[in-house]
Image (tube, rainbow, N blue to C red):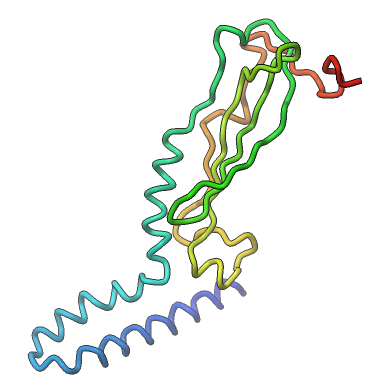
Amino acid sequence: MAGLILLAVLAGWSLLVYHGVRLAVQKVTNQRKQKVFRIILVPVVFLLPVADEIVGQFQFRAMCSEEVIFVDEINAKNTDIYYAGVRRSNQDGILPFMKEAWIFKEVNTDKVLVSWSVIRAKGGWLSRIIGFPEGNPPYTFYGYCSPEGAFDFDFKKLNLNEVERKSVKGDE
């Protein structure tokens, strides 16, 4: 049903754009220039509601390409670690981005030994106004990325023993 509604909205928007552009270029007397203006203006005006997402997608991809799994190679061997939680921070950009840092610390020193970040993008102004689907994701791209293998990270490979937070010294 949502797909049919989306198709109806797109069809209505297409008709509105086409007739609006035709009306706007009527004052141009040269028929050839009118046609050229219509060919250029129809796609431009059609894409305006999601233009911020189209530009924001490039920024999102650049942010995602920089994300890696951080491992303190020197200290991250044969030790106990615990999951220290997720730190969330909002990132400035054309679209609203949220960066979630997943952190694992060494039990005795509280030093970060393993971490990675996940980036989530919200949709552009159209997505936020409409509010569909829930969470306002971008309409033009998948707004989630994490480093490859982040959630399948093999702690055993470095002989890291993951313990529960409640069993960490000093938490009793």
